[in-house]
Length: 158
Image (cartoon, rainbow, N blue to C red):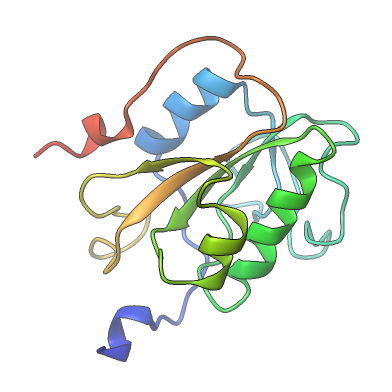
């Protein structure tokens, strides 16, 4: 495997609005659990200083957004999202579709709803599309705000 596909100087990429907005509408997302002031998707968020990995996600919010740094720490974020479902928190997560990883097998497959995205995401401020496929995972703590059925792939038809 060519390691260039998994290397980057930046592991924090802002989610494109075309992906986030339909999910926000479907689920009523109100909190971003791993963001910065410049890439947050909601008014309320945890940044690096607050460290969402050690915070309770469900004390004030029930549906949260998670676009974690896509580096070596991603497994910790996926595990945290899985643990928060036990407290009633629904986490909508944008993740690389890495079906060969232990975090995928331990916390996602056969446990969560998965929506594979068609094509490759072009993150905000990126010069080109990501060199990997992506997926949206719904870690279910509560039911969606409404019964809208959205297909993310619509935004990637070429």
